[in-house]
Amino acid sequence: MGNRFSAECPFRGSSADAEERALAIIALFNWKVEGDGEGRINARTSMSAFGRGEYVTLSFLKGNRMFVESESVSAFQFFDFGKNRNNVEKFIEAFRDRKLPLEEKERSFLDRYFSGR
Image (cartoon, rainbow, N blue to C red; front, side, top):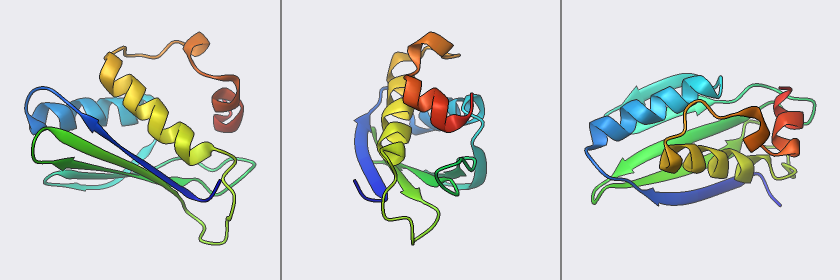
């Protein structure tokens, strides 16, 4: 497992539109935006029983590509129990499908369990 996961996702339209949609998804997931700048958004998930949360970084690259990375807050957390992978995949799924808000039944049991919702 490990304490980091990343993936790349293509998008259509402008980077500004993609950033706006990404911020809406971050708000929907109740992640806290810790900083954003041109072409980059930094967010943090909430703490859970299994860790202190994760940093999620979105980088908007040339060629309409977005790089999504999730990393455990604690450098000493050697296993994330799939939470980083889940953060990235959940974000990309919501971003691609444009289904906002996500219905509870569409989220996995582990995602609901770990997020406390």
